[in-house]
Length: 472
Ligand code: FAD
Ligand code: MLT
Ligand code: ZN
Image (cartoon, rainbow, N blue to C red; front, side):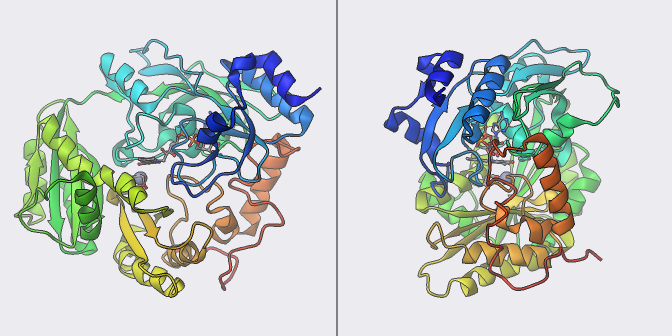
């Protein structure tokens, strides 16, 4: 049977999108760097339809790219070879009642982070995760990428929020552990394997989301700092003196200038500095004194403090505004990496030089560095090189490995960094990953080319041993 009529029979004609203009909006990623033409976009309404769609695509031998809000930044949620079916999960948007005793809520994979946050707050809880794409990104996408964001410092990444999971494997088999049992060690934890697998091992359809207590008393500080060492010292003081610390972020002065220009507003700071730390404390009772004690312990004399929502949002816009401001300036090469805190200064100092040296022929190459200081998570954004020029990416990832870090902290590997997986994880671990993939998806239907490179794909064009550097 032809695939399109088979899909019509499963989800209805209206939910198989083939109009080129409509399909185009699902084919290119948020950065504009990745994408290829899709056969169609299919929009199932529930887990049974997802299973039937996967069976139909498997029978037709057509690869499937799962997609949520399409806010991913590594090209993993859009077609890459051309001809894939985009499986959009956004119609799975049911939100159940919050269970206050368990502190959980059942949510469909297509529920946006913003909708989850609103439901949690209305019931006296919070989602325990937050980042700039909140109005578009989905629960399924967050779980598939093991997303982090600004509150991972306190609440962990998406993995820590998953109390139960339902998913469909490549052959249409439904796996489901949704009872919210605190203890359940009967057999392999398949759900854990699916978290962070970026749509390559299964399609997430429902999640039992573990909530955190709501903290309405919030205070935010923007602190100018002279160096990465000062930023790390401030982080240490915040950890020691402010148990209510929820976020600790950083950005540099060139990023601030770009954001202020994009947002057409003046700097709220009287004095500019090489770098800035944005810290937020959240508690049931006013955490201002805790924060003040931490700033004093760190010897901070000059900080902007906001304890009302408008003031806090103004400070957060300076940090979160980086992604949009950079996108507005060009198609970025985005490297989301993590380094041990002890290596942060070295990494920040060397990254721009490594990029410039890698692309000496590219005029106006610009490197912006910002991220989640508390997690050692740096977002390296390079403007200038053409989208398919990998030299700057390779230079940054080489430096990350030399610093004992990871090539992906929270965005995932996607297609952007698949070629680097073996350098980062070693041949043995990648072989184990391939074995898992082959067991769960022997025909290679689910998201081929993401995370695990095609076996014939070239390795990164850099010298060095195919092993991760030892961590002393
Ligand atoms: P998509 O982009 O649609 O897909 C992402 C990946 O997940 C793809 O590999 C896709 O195949 C897979 N996938 C999607 N849905 C499913 C499903 N139901 N089952 C199986 N696989 C699925 N990320 C962070 O971690 N921290 C941040 O602070 C952060 N900030 C961001 C800020 C902005 C402005 C933007 C644009 C992005 C940001 N991101 C951040 C990246 C992105 O929002 C996250 O990776 C998010 O989790 C992606 O969700 P999505 O629904 O948009 O997924
Ligand atoms: C962020 O922390 O702002 C995001 O991860 C998005 C980005 O890296 O641009
Ligand atoms: Zn981030």
